[in-house]
Image (cartoon, rainbow, N blue to C red; front, side):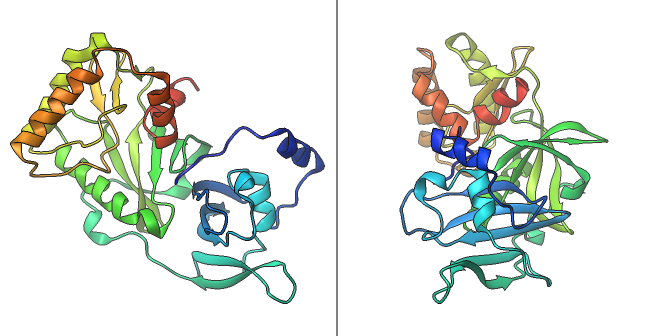
Length: 296
């Protein structure tokens, strides 16, 4: 289950006032994949200078309630060992009980076959502004301006990342989703995507049915089923609809499936989206990635 940082609890606020140690000064958490099961490990993507480290922390080291609390996480992760590595596992030393790096590896999360766009920019070129969800961030680039960065922050999500990256290639030039601005690189290896920042975007409403049908029809004309349309329509300031989040999309979808998705859209927009659906979108990286960013 992926979560982004939550509002601190009263207890966590007291810990912040005490000043928890950061064993890697300057390090920041870029993304996370969190479990709510007590013994499950949790994965964090951490920026340290111009390096990106993907750290898995054993479930015994951080309580469930603190796994999304950044100061606690950074106080648990021990000092980064030297050497050429980008993926590590932090475990509890059976002799001392302290957190230690039990393994480090250099893992290539990206894959050459996903590079279809001529634009590729190193993460170090961006000014990282803030996380929006577990894998989505708002950033600024001197040549592009405000952008949305969506990253594959751990090995477990790399397949979805590859699928979504390739899907943006299929819809390129059809005015269906946000503009794909290039591949996000970590020392030449793709590990994320750079997307258009849609200023003043808003959630789709019943009055936007025709605009949403128009963009969904474009997607279906390519034989692609979105598969997760519940809260993934945004409306630009000019009234045009935009589809986002293509990690569940499928190609060569049967005609019956496409027609069923079109009917689902009509049913969804007969009434305003319930608050629960919007909250779910914020946690899933849809409305949060654009609506929240637009209010920055």
